Length: 227
Image (cartoon, rainbow, N blue to C red; front, side, top):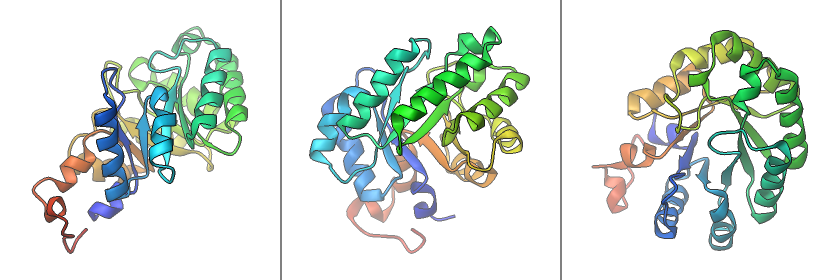
């Protein structure tokens, strides 16, 4: 698997609360140079980034990272993000609803946010580290029924990130129109290849570009043969 094969599946991500505009611009420059799938950035940076990089595929997060804001707030966040230039929305479910067995509420919320996204991509973060296997399976069904485009493992802010076993579980239970995004804790080249081969269509990470290009002729403008 070449660097290109991997980088085209990366949501190049910077979501830390202290992220500066300079850091965001570095992220975007890297995304443009190395042709990542998208940049995933805080909502407050969507409009400034769109103004500077109008051709860049921008992803942002809503209800992030805890997911328990009210549905109406999440809808407004999604609408504002899309108006500002985002093409992809990563929403966090209300995990408390899952824990209370209110799967119908989770379903309705995702449906409403998908409607707000219209033709834009919606990824649903279920925060696997807090769910039982049965709850994960139920959420595969909910995400499929709601018409979302992706099911995503994690925010990266929970107690654990993506696990290979969850990707394999998702593959068994999601519908044919739903893709998988792994996020959180995918740190090595072996991790990246393993998760992609297991079925992840996207990987959310802040480290892939550095990992794949460090000590490479790419840093000085060259392109290695296997790139």
